[in-house]
Image (cartoon, rainbow, N blue to C red; front, side, top):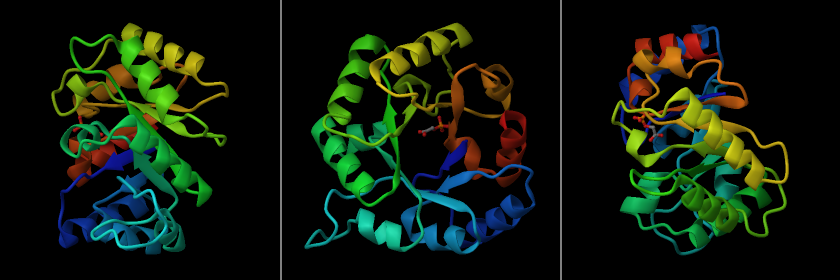
Length: 222
Ligand code: PGA
């Protein structure tokens, strides 16, 4: 799985060019654009996800997007618990948990984002984020491991560290969970990050904003 998280970037012209490029590419990415562009990707037949979702299906929640609305638009995936949501928008594990449940109820595929910051004990953080995030959750979710220090920094964990962490994540979950890696996945790091056993894919942030680079990275990693 090659997933692009556009965050709050790109404008309509860029989106149109990206769609043309993706249609010609040799791999099939999942794009999580800024929500207002989602329908362009859906209509082009490209797998689409949202970067966040609300925890109710409807109601007086100005500015929010609901899981049932997303589903009705043909959106297939939703990222929940990205570190920027946790840090900037003060989302806690209990919010993440409610969002996951509502998204799954609406048959969206959930990508739960987890990861420790520098100086934190990765086992402690991952155990908390995964057990609280998945409390009472009965369907399977995808987990994206994104160490906070690796996001936008060009610093990535070593292959050994990554394999150890993936192994730890898999032990915390009682099914054969798909684990992705995110954080400074780019052309320079792709060689080191590719072909890691047990890794099911990659979540690409800033490097996914440059169309040519994104296609090149996707080709290396897929
Ligand atoms: P990055 O972001 O690729 O720019 O490090 C990844 C992410 O935040 O999902």
